[in-house]
Image 1 (cartoon, rainbow, N blue to C red):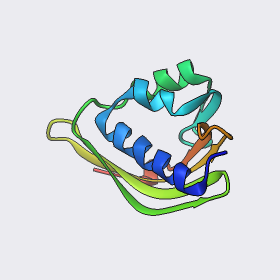
Image 2: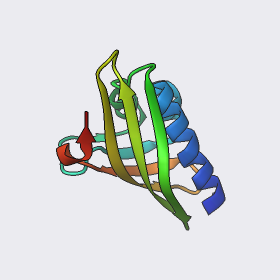
Image 3: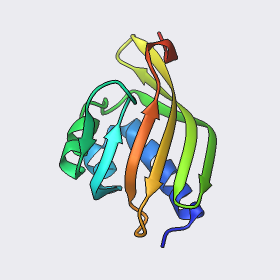
Amino acid sequence: MSTPEDNAKTVNRYLELAAQGKADDIAELYADDATVEDPVGGGEVHIGREAIRGFYGALPASGAQTQVQTLRALGNEAAFHWTLNIDLGGNKMAIDIISIMTFNDEGKIASMKAYWGPENVTQ
């Protein structure tokens, strides 16, 4: 069984990989039957590792940074407030996000929901 400390490490690894745009490595953090809803209420729920890999394939391979404001890992869940900063060659944006992850007994991410909308994006 994973511990809250293990789950916090997975969150930090997830954010590190997101900044690097490493979709394959991010997908490996997820359980085979995991779900991703990003943003919540904004469209498709990605189910399964292959769909999740495809979703993260849209991340830029460079020019991104992540910054955690708050991280709480308790039981088999983690909630974290963070910012994704992206520099697309002179066009910079920041997305202010609150994410919730649940973890299975093996420490894999079972679900992730990201709460943000257009009002949370600044240029």
